[in-house]
Amino acid sequence: MSGRLVVVLLLLAAVVLSVPAASHTGLMTWLSLAASSTAFVAMAINQFLATRPRFLEPMFGGLDRIYHFHRQIGIAAFLLILVHYFITPDFQGKQLTAGLNAAAKVVGEYGFYGLIALIGFSLVKRIPFTKFEVPYHLWRQSHRFIGVFFLLIAFHQFFIKRPFDGTALLANYLNIFMAIGVLSFAYSQFVAFTKRRRYEVIAVERLPAATVIEAKPVRSGIRARPGQFAFLSFSQSGLREPHPFTLAGMDEDGTIRFAIKPLGDYTRRLREKAAVGDRILVEGGYGRFSHARGGEKQVWLAGGIGVTPFLAMADSLKNDHGRQIHLVHCVRDAGEAVRAEKLADKASQVPGFSFVLHDSQAAGRIDAEKLAASAPFDLDGADLWFCGPPPLREAIVKGLKKAGNRLKRIEFERFEFR
Image (cartoon, rainbow, N blue to C red):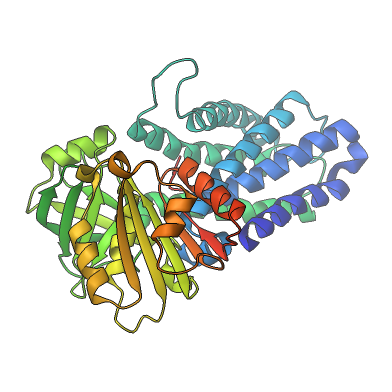
């Protein structure tokens, strides 16, 4: 993706600019400065990516890819900070005042230890050698403090003694990213709430495999396309933490639907507490999982609750959509199906759209051969749109290739936000 390339070039620019700024100080001091400068740029970029900039989604392939790359940049910054810490630079250079320099040194130490602790914690989803998984709300709250420690590092970067003056290209470059990082953090903490829209829950249906929430906008609704997701925050205690869920449908009047499987503590509380009349804040839509970008032949493969985006996409199909689309919903048993009757009705009404519910308990595990046999068209040259467990996707793609079916494109989301 072009977005990744741009970020890599921005990071490399910090390395290049550090050469004339510190090469005269010796190799190890230059290496320490290059590492710290690159880490600072990486942290500033991560602060910007945390604002969820929609206009960058095409460059990265969706917000899910942005978050995935955000994590990779965080790991890189973590390692570069360690390099700077363990390779002590020998700066016999510029400083504004002795007092500011001393303060910058102390603040930098606090920032270093804070960032190391928080970045390390944010990268750990499960405590090693245990079954304890860090709760999402703890991870999210701790993650927010990374911005606070970035401010300390920014102060350190601006006032610490250095082997170049304030007119050096590297100084100007780092100051630009300092502004980007600080403004991004301020935006995410104080302005981002303006992107949220107020909704009222008008229906709650507790199906065996999912809780279906339907809500209408109090005033204006979100702008979203079928296949996208949004962040929900309920007004009820215990449900206020924003969580991402895929849209299962969106009506012309702005009414939206979500089908949410009770997998964790939050989703189980939601199933128990959600009620008609609840107020929720919705931010979205995000993501690039849209069949409108696909070709004339498409296979939609859903595993379990992965049918959610396809519910919205199927609902949007018109008689003149002009594509051959085959949807297969794989479930462990019939009780896990969500809105199967609605999808079957849609298939009977819309030419070119077909639907199969694959019950693994009755028909065995889905594989490439069964998928190809269920489709009313040749899968060679078709698109595969997938939402479900990654091992299933990998097995299906491998099986189709082995059978000689060359897929034109494979689309899926990395629905992992930490």
